[in-house]
Length: 351
Ligand code: HBI
Image 1 (cartoon, rainbow, N blue to C red):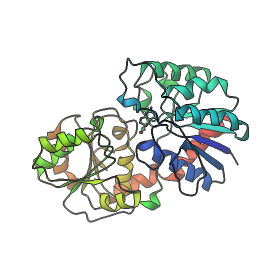
Image 2 (cartoon, protein in one colour):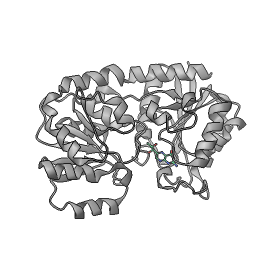
Image 3 (tube, helix red, strand yellow):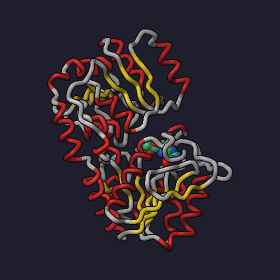
Image 4 (cartoon, rainbow, N blue to C red):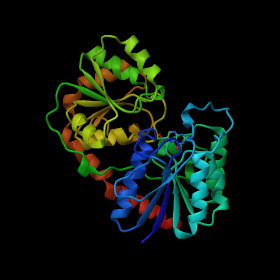
């Protein structure tokens, strides 16, 4: 039985959606490790909540999202930083745990690593974004070999320490996702509404095909959304908000396809395996994590990045994809058991 301390992302409380995919990763991992009989405690900003997992809520000011920082900016910490407060708490209790797992994409946890006696596993949730952060990650990768975990090879390749990364994929509680064999005539787009996700390309594809597009996700950048509505006033789109997994999978399952249009390099693409779990084919730009997940022509299509007409060509070929093959891939590669096996092996290697 392992005693694990998960220290969460500082960008927002767990359950708020601000932490995007890393919230889902942390929750699923905590549930799976618990199921395996390990003792998991989560440290997260106050206002966080997780089903059946003890959460130590820490007060303080949330950290700005790394993708909103400019590459040449210095590393910043706000006054009464929740990131600093979470790690100070971790320092005081580290003796009670076999391993600390860091879920923050931030400079401080990497800098603090040599000051801790308890081993620390770092799960990096995005690609390279910031030279000062890359530098600190590189130091940890070399001085604490094996402690850097990432989701995909393409994400690892964005870092100078690519060969020192452990590739862990991701996973879902598939029992929460129900296979749907007969969708309606609509498509889905799922993700934080933010420029790096290029929602406008999905909207443009809906306009070109006339197939209604359901949009799900945290409204992160309102002005960005307003600009899309102005640029595509007649596109058949509907914003459905940030839904719970139960609600999302119900609506997602009734779609003919999920469109994945990242402008940036997605480290993984949780929404891709959520769609596959519901039997929904995925049409994605051949870029980042989705390009490593989707089996082109079998569980979806990978198309030329930033090319809306290529998305449309993929949509027209949807009949070629078997929806049950999509669900099958999720069960083979992205179940919580598969995820738990990969992570437990990693954790044990570090203890
Ligand atoms: N930014 N500073 C910072 N820290 C994080 O942990 C972080 C982030 N931006 C996005 C993010 N985490 C997650 O939404 C993605 O890793 C999925």
